[in-house]
Length: 341
Image (cartoon, rainbow, N blue to C red; front, side, top):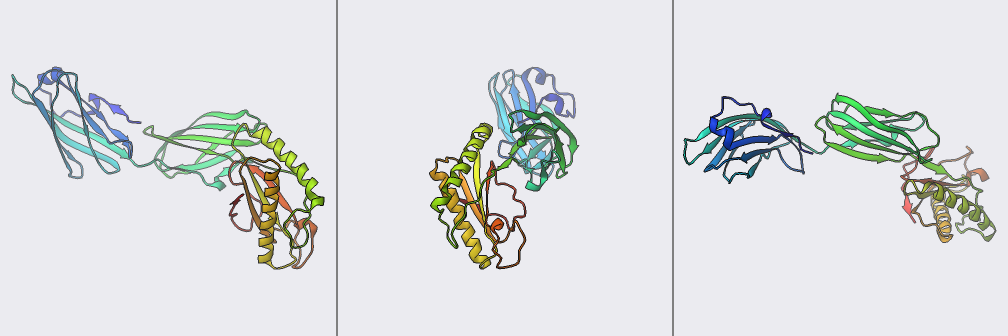
């Protein structure tokens, strides 16, 4: 948005010639966001004139000179292109009349051009258990409008948090009271001190689907016929969760595969990835329509710590997670490279 400042924002260096009172009015759009415009001087023509000339010098020495005119009722806009930041201008507006001597109005004012307003939230800055979210703004912070939506459909919080002009880059924090359910979404709309704003929606929500593990044949990734009933049951739980929570956000299914320590680590990683894909495809074949992603950790994230070459059934497992954004995984050995099905 632009903040429009009228004549009171122009510092007059001398008493204007009386003709200005009826013929000309000057106002200033002093602030602008980069990419959305520039600060602008406006000359409002109220009575007949022959023309006008604006002569300005910016604080860094850059000169601006514009000639114009118009009939009563016309407003001439004079853009003031400038780099990011605050600048001071000094100069004058000279008006020519057909029946009087030219009159000059000295001008002195400040403008400001803002670069993009950035709001940064890292994954580790969202602490659902502590009911807290931290973030930073790239400019001085005015206030933030916050909405915290639970997966019950109710709002744990909706309101404003004032940051009183905290400097750019200062860690800022919003908190919310305890409420029934899990936090589905935290919506932030952050304003700088000039009332420019930006926003972000954060979705820390995820649900792990309980299930009975599918038993695969040694070094195989196809689901045995005798194990398919387990996937039927699990698919029913996934479908129920999607119906229950899908009205609040667009959901996805994430499938993670794990193996025990029998065999080489690289081979186990590849095997777990193939099995995760096989499970994901089985849910798709049963009618799943949401986006599905899969990853395999092999023997690198054991549920039960064992020596190498140990056959441990509890480590031959999968995880089924419903989430809006990439889920947080406990003891992930590396950042998942989620593969879309």
